[in-house]
Length: 273
Image (cartoon, rainbow, N blue to C red; front, top):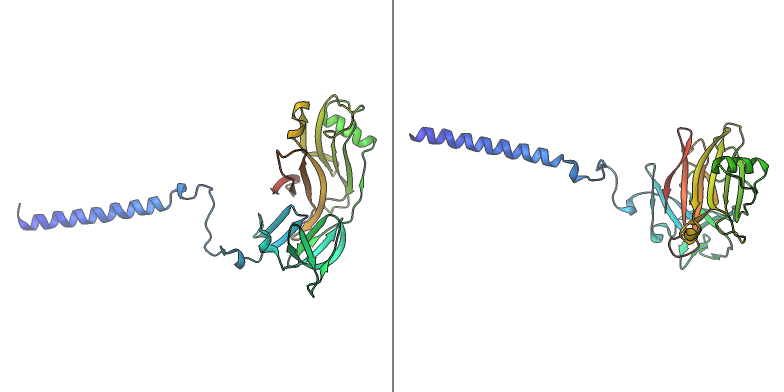
């Protein structure tokens, strides 16, 4: 084999090597395994929390939430401190204050004067478009008893509720009064034949169940109880979001808040602590 043939073979091998390397690199860089969550990286989004102008929501000493690009995340207290917040205490407007965290959230005015408060804290940052409606909680009546019996498929005449909440409000702003019902007998003083948690809404005449726990007596300490904590409208949504607080009798779980939004006519859980 003469010298020219060797040169031709070498050129062919080099060309093949470059082609194989290029094909492997392009194929490997596009593998889904490099992104196991199926998310699409967006280099235009900031990655440093200080660069992101989060809209913030604080609920008691339990929930520190951030909202950005239509997504909710959990924030650390230091990311929240010293921002200006619209504050509600026990569901009533309390003022505009800065929040600083010690063992609990503390309020300070513009002169850094400590502002005392007692009760349930609900606060949202001033860059967040939030509407908190006025509403009252009542207790179940005959209509709710029938609805609960239908959902559970059994009579509840002998049930003694430990949680008993009803909120009547137009949830989707169409002029029709809707309803949120939250009941439980897990913490009842009297012995019960069966135990359950139930939270449902009646939206435009249709029942939607948010929570239904049928609980064996030996599992009572392992289950949470729920409370209608807050309603809010944010980001100009054409409905009220529902926040249910989840608490436990024992240390099997931590108290948290659960956020339900309306999508395609149905409320569903979208975020929690």
